[in-house]
Image (cartoon, rainbow, N blue to C red; front, side, top):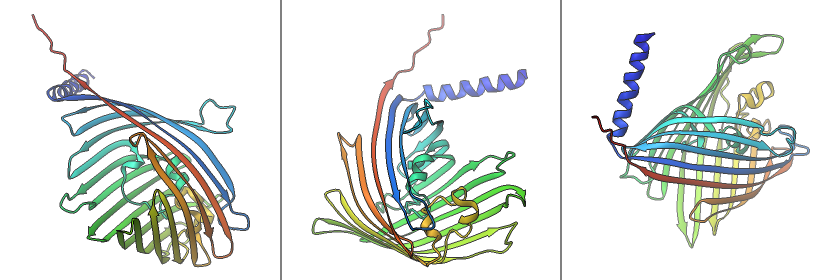
Length: 359
C-alpha cells in the first residue's frame, strides 16, 4: 500500500511540474439548451405521436496548459418540463482530457457529443437522442489536413452499456471522413453497434451486431446569394441477432439530400429508398437503433421535407433554431415541429504559478 501511495504521489508531482512549467489558463463557462420537439404521427405505424420539452444546464470548469492541453469537468443537469415532483430529472457528469493541435484533435473520458464532426445524418442519431444522450464516454481522434479546408478523418468509440445483471454490454465504434475538391466533396460515415443482453428466451433478449456504412458524394456551392448543398449516399447495413436468426441480414438503399439556404432559412428534402435498415426495431427499439425510426420502413421509402430557420446572436453566444418537417413512411404523412434555444459561454482567465520560497 505504501509503495502504491508513493507511486501516485510521484505521478501527481510530475503532472503538477509539467503543468506548472507552462502557461496556464483557467477556463470556466456554461452551456444551456432548451428543446421543444412535437410529433404528430397519427396513422403512421412505426413511430408514435408525442412531445418532448426539456431544459439542460451544463456549468463547466477546467484548466488549459501549454496552449493545446485541456482538463475539463462539467455537470449536466436536465429538467423535463412537467416533472413537478422532481427537482431534476437527470444529472450526469462530463470529465475529459483534450489535446488540440492544428492537425490533430484527441479526447478521452466523458465529453460532449458536439466534439464529433461526422455522422450528422438522422439515420445514425435522431434529434432527441442527440439531446438526451449528449455525451460520449470513450475516446475520439481526428486528423485534419490544412491544405484542404474541411477535410478530415475521425474515429470515436462510445461505451454506452456496462456489464451488469440487466445489460451485458453496449458500445458503438464510429468513423467518418470527408475530402472536398472544389465544389465537390467525397466521404463516408461508419458505425458498428454492439448490443448484448443476458440470454433469456422468456424475454427474447439476444446479442446483436449492427453495422452501417454510408459512402457519399456531394456538391456544396454558393450561387446567387443562396447556399446549395446536395448529397447522394449509398447505405449498406449488416445486422445479426446471434441468438435468434444466426445469419447476417444486409438491407441497403440510397439516400438523396438536397438543401437551399439564405438569410438563415433552409428548405430541404431527404429521400431514402431501399430496404428496412432497422431490421430488429420491433424487437429492440431505440435501445439498439438511435436514428429516426422511419428508416425501419417496410414500404421501401422514407421522405422528409423540412423548412427551418437558424440564427446566432450576441457574438454567437446565443443561437435559435426552429423548424417543421413533413414525413412520409410510405403510407401516411406526419409532421414534426421543434424549437431549440442554446447558450454557450466560455471565459479564460490567465494564471500565474505561485513561486515557492524555500528558506
